[in-house]
Length: 155
Image: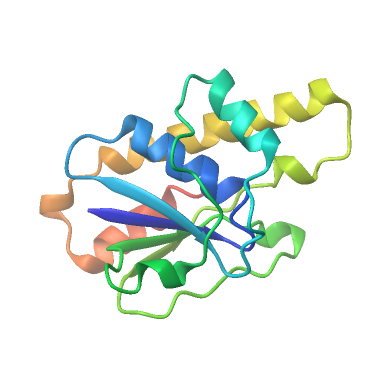
């Protein structure tokens, strides 16, 4: 199963989600990430947070969902923060879509220690959601039940 995590710039939250998912996922599961308006670079704060957590950063880069046109995902999860008024990207295609809103720790204007703490909190949230996702009984859920279950993980 291929999961695409999307946000606007693909420089922080979707990258964190891709890396955590691939760190935890068993064989047969893969995560990728993209942005509707990719920044072209991954935030150094994102890379540092992953390294501190012992998660590889190899192969992570900011990209558009267009790069997956030939190999579309099975599931698309947006991770933008609707509560903060962010516009979430739209993925066109017949795939299961869900939303796991996350605050953007890279946008925080605070001390270095507070920013690091915000990244650690975001990583914990992503890890909990990914673990719950991987524990879903995929073989017993129909498409609507799966969509509902995946969306519920973002609440």
